[in-house]
Amino acid sequence: MSDLGFPLAILAELTHRCPLQCPYCSNPLALEAASAELTTAQWRAVIEEAADLGVLQIHFSGGEPTARRDLEELVAAASAAGIYTNLITAGVLLSRDRLQALVKAGLDHVQLSFQDSEAAGCDRIGGYQGGFAKKLECARWVKDSGLPLTLNMVVHRQNLAHLEDLLTLAEDLGAQRVEIAHVQYYGWAYLNRAALMPSRAQLEDATAVVEAARERLKGIMVIDYVVPDYYARRPKSCMGGWGRQFLNISPAGKVLPCHAAESITSLTFDRVTERGLRDIWENSEAFKAYRGTAWMPEPCRSCERKEIDWGGCRCQAFALTGEAGTVDPACAKSPLHAEMQALATAESGKDVQDFTYRTRKAGEAAAQKVPETLV
Amino acid sequence: MAERITITEKSVPGLPVGVKLRFDKQRDQWVILAPERLFVLDTIALEIVKRCDGAASVGEIVDDLAATFAAPRDVILKDVGALLQDLADKRILAA
Image (cartoon, rainbow over all chains, first blue to last red):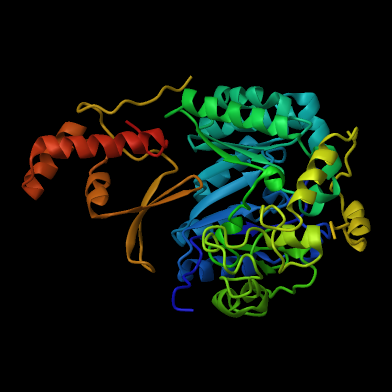
């Protein structure tokens, strides 16, 4: 354990409550109730513990983190502990005054989501009427406050045609950074895969658009780009390796190696209310399960890339094979790789527009069903 | 519309709002904290970034470094210019 440090950054999912209902939400299908959420005092204790362990950045996320009335207090606690504070928000619950209060509390950066480049698509995909107009207003308030602004844009078959417009929107709003992230297919997105999956041609076009924009906007806007691995040859280095660099705390205090980890139903997760954060990081069974390389099957175990991609994504392996410890089918060395690519192509060609929106009820129903696997 | 910053000797560099220079005591290193980014600074980069206070020009910073480390000014100017241009392009330096 000597080479295991503590994560530099943590993701604090303060609540699963959210006014939006995006069909690719990274929260688990079984959403935690407001009554299960950590109290202000519990979050403050977690923040202080994290700072003592060497966390330098905290991302306040959700659900919608501004749905917590104590957000200012938590931002202030993190800021006082010397942690860089980032707010990941849909923007629709914020007022100018609330944003000012957050800035005053020590907020360092705002990441604002857009579901599309225009109102009709944005409001339909997010399942929230009037959301687009509120987001535009929120972006301007952030700029007026002087804080750096990042626009987060999740892309998929139903908005990829607007990618150029999304980048122009970010430029017009004065964002200094944009995250263009293709949907990753776990949980809600897995459920909505047939309505979201792009074709390979769409993916290639998107990548070309991003590359051209990066060239054009050098020194003006930083563009981070996350590609989908259904069409890849090698898996992504998911989270930089399971339990190596990242931890996520759920609204009820469960400590997770990634935000989708609860989709792996064979694992159980420790809570900050029951164990210390360092103890969980170093010793909890869920973190140890796929940390490092000892758990790997062949061909991962003897692969020269095993410490580059760390075996790819455990959630994806579980979703597609029913077994989290198998080879990630995104890898060309997986026996299921061809089937995964064929599946992506088939899904991308389906005439499906409608979503199963992220609601507690839909989540409860879907969580009862075991997702269909490739095997 | 924002424009790309070009660093010259006359530029006056500083860290913008949302970018912070911190000492990471648990790991015994200096870091720059920025939106979704963290840069670990080596000794040379730290000496340069520490001097980006929004008051001194690049030319003055280079003079100071040349005197402090008894090194040729033209070599330092080249290194400082390259580092600051890189930071500006990453949107973590104002000038």
